Amino acid sequence: MESKMLVDLDEITKRIIKICNKKSSRRCFIQVPEGLTHLAHELSRRIIMEGVEGIVSVDPCFGACDIPYWKAKELGCDLIIHIGHAPMPTIKIPFDVEFIEVFYEVKVREDLIEELSKKILSMGFKSVGLVTTVQYLKLLAYVRTLLEKHGLKVFIGKSSGRALYDGQVLGCNVSSAKSISEKVDAYIFIGDGTFHPVAVYLAIGKPVLAFNPITGEIKDVRDLGERVLRVRLAHMMKASEARSFSVVVTSKVGQYNEELLRTVVNALKKFNREYSIIHLENIGEVLNYMKNVDVFVIIGCPRIVYDDYLKFKRPIITGTELLLSLSRKFKDWKFMEMP
Image (tube, rainbow, N blue to C red):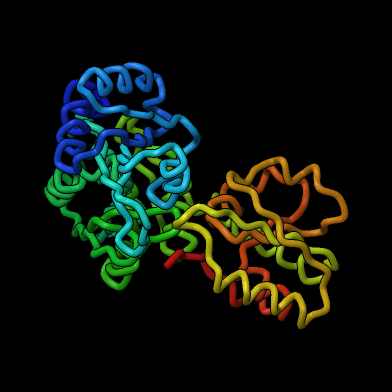
């Protein structure tokens, strides 16, 4: 089994220069994902050699919701080029931004798909939905064809909201999976990691198998999903009894939610709770140093709460979980998706 990320430095450089020339850009701000930071120096050097000042940012970048246009503006750039993710249609960025998507090229042996098919059929499933992240989108049609050869009904759902492509899922949007929920017995997530398939399970409640096309590993994520759900409910119950809350906001353009912040603040006032409002651009363990806080309420990416909760020494909840906690409506919990 072979895999490689489709990143040809010559091709990327040509695409950037072509975009800059089309936009008449003389200084551009280029965001690269963590996996491409090793190319930052060479990429900037090559672009500069072509007559455009390419400032490559190697700050942490968590997706197309994380476009720091104010940094580009402060640096005198007239264009942002974001490498690695697909644009999010519902996010309006007050700056000129172009996207260069990056895909994995994976050669998956047919016998691995046969093993996947046997696993699915042995679990009693006859129809499945395929989902993936943007990096593995090119595999969907191939895997679908092979699964159908083994007698399975296979569906790829329509995306909406901030997910751009059919079959694509984000940590905050699983619309493609939801659109076919009535047609499938289970889902197959194609990709690496467990966060995205767990998100599908939490949002829909049907079985999800994570299939890694690079290693061939097949993992049923239901136990992981149930563990996350138990932690969510435990944190909410603690929040319902807590007195002091720190509401943590980020200024990331695709994560900050002013309406949710106002709703959360009003609820804390209504239930006579103490609260602060703290800004943190990249929300992390620094919160552990804060004193006199019982619970942190995150107005930002829900992944921080669902996937990174072990980093924090005190309960950490989303804004919607806070509202349910104060009203003690724990059974109304549902997976938080971003508009």
